[in-house]
Image (cartoon, rainbow, N blue to C red; front, side):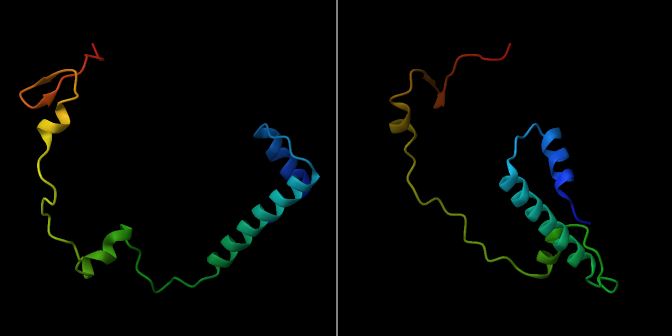
Amino acid sequence: MSLNPQDIQRIANLARLSLDESQSTRMREQINGFFDLVTQMQGVKTDDIEPMSHPLDLMQLQTLRLRDDVASEPNQREANQRSAPSVERGLFLVPKVIE
């Protein structure tokens, strides 16, 4: 599939875009380049490949290298709440915004 200049002008009109000739040409080349990529991808043989239900299915076969969950900074709640206009039992109090 390939777009011609009239197709680009119609798309630009629908999108309420004003494109000059050079912008229209560049847009047509970019969109046609995308269509060429899609055509190339459709040519890949995937008959023997089992579809995944989720992209992370492959991750189940590997163990993730996660760091230990350790608190690395001291608790500074009181110091952080000193500048708050209103605090009660260690919580910030804010005005009610939903009724």
